[in-house]
Image 1 (cartoon, rainbow, N blue to C red):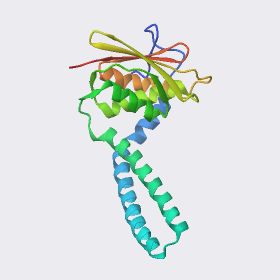
Image 2 (image 1 turned 180 degrees about the vertical axis):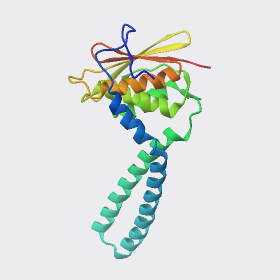
Image 3 (image 1 turned 90 degrees about the vertical axis):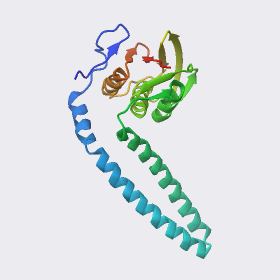
Image 4 (image 1 turned 135 degrees about the vertical axis):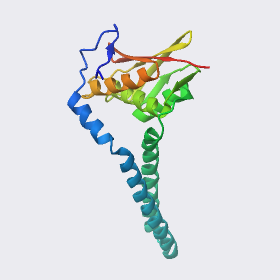
Length: 210
């Protein structure tokens, strides 16, 4: 397995080398992620049940400060459950299904915590959708760095779509090579291609189906 990606000229990128030792560490830790997610889900369920009991006791006292504290804890717990659900989706299936290209890009940008500007054409992509979203979000996050806005442009050529993500970040992410190498493998598995470009650009091609 080659830990690399291509540049805008179709050559192996030498600007963003991947750290094989770091990726091996992450991969080793990742083998435990299914069990970890299960254990964490059980713990969160226990906290939720305890918080339900605490909330009932608070209602009996009518103390507004305690009620606010319980509501804050509830919000944090709900957020943690949402994050866990997203991570569990990555390990639940390896089956390819069809998904909206627009929804995939929107979810990937949300996963990267960036605001997307531009339009994405309609179309369906066949892939392991949660994994593709994660990989694309990983790559987008790498090129945006501290800049949390990305410009998206798209052109459709026959049964393929070319996406360009552009950022005006000043400093590249330290792990950009690792992120792009992993994302490139996942996108290739969806019969697509990832290339990094000059001026903090990311070029992604994906086949459209149906």
